[in-house]
Length: 276
Image (cartoon, rainbow, N blue to C red; front, side, top):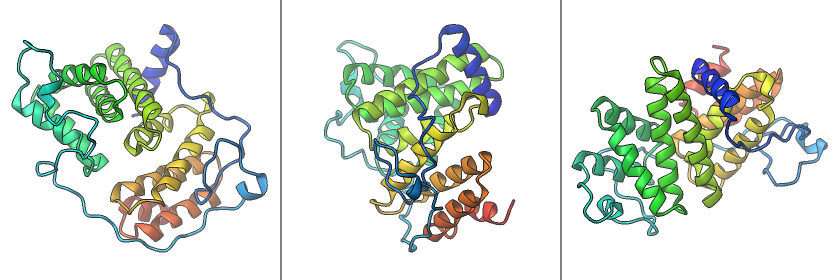
């Protein structure tokens, strides 16, 4: 993943890069129990490590193939309806995969699994083309932009070892798609998590650490207002990792402990708490 990100950065420097959200350099570290606002929190609040929360029930994951279509009435009920009249009909496998990608109950891991399956079947390029048409036809639909960003990222990672230039371009397109999704739906967990996970792998000299903390903190605050989902544990994992990178080991431990209080069976949280 780091090699992937470094390649992105090299291409961004050569080609002018893309517009990412600016880091708030002077903002104090925000513990995950604090709500992220547009204004910076007071240092007195920011210097307290996160607290553990009561355990919540974990929602069961939804099988990929049986997932219902998303409840978002703003998107067409059928994928084929996004195709221009006279265009070649969408492959049924691609149509079903896209409908699954747009299904709200799917987890982050399930969405990645769908895209991997499309890539293995040689259908990912066609799926990307279809998602591009859908996103262009409805630029205000955050679901389309998010799915397209994930498809770009999957394709970019798949070809990076053999085609660094095009892999990097796809990764930059993914970030742009996530930015578009968040501009229309700031509460879009999938877009914010994936975009922030990319930033988390940027080298330290680019000073993205505070932005990563801010974004994961915002996600955790958002998660606290929703029923617990297994994928939400990842926000605690990566936020703790970022604290550790900045040498804030107490914050890292407190973050992982707070996550384990809600997701006691998450193996990644348990490994980090055990020092593995």
